[in-house]
Image (cartoon, rainbow, N blue to C red; front, side, top):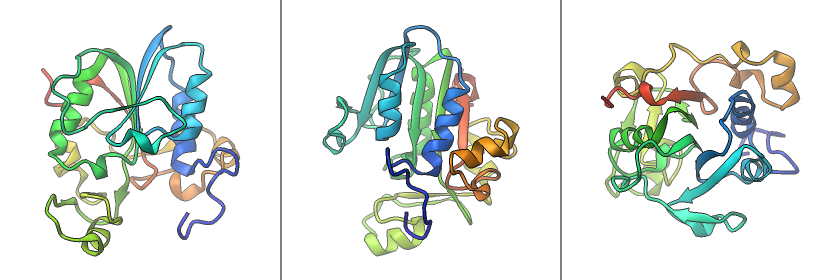
Length: 218
């Protein structure tokens, strides 16, 4: 994957972040007949969800469902969630999605947490990069988007240097990220998750959040 050698699974195509979020997912106890909403579904995770007996409803969603021919994917716009039901899902999961969403991030996060059941889980990977938060919804061109945000189709950069002043104003986030508090080093290595992805806020940071972790909800 770009300059990272030997990180994509030869069988399911997963990257480090996908395997790490899978470890966290296995550590979560879902209720019987759980209802799951999965944005931009990764094939490996999709196939695993389809085999879980405890899943009662598994909804795959994306702004462009045609990209996911392996899944029964519905169209859902993360900038237009007002009509989505509240207290609906036991698990909402996504990875490397929020940097693509061209609207106020507070809007999207508010509605995602509103859609969670009271004991539901929001499990996500947000790619934190060096530097400060930055975003633009203007037509600045692919080259400038790549320079500022790391990829031509990104609209924002989640900076690791100023988390308390952007995402920290919306979500109750941990002071740091450390996967070794949940998983032994040998487990992480067996999943081919390199030590550079174990700790700190980076491109593979997994956030496990509850409905009450959204500060804007009553």
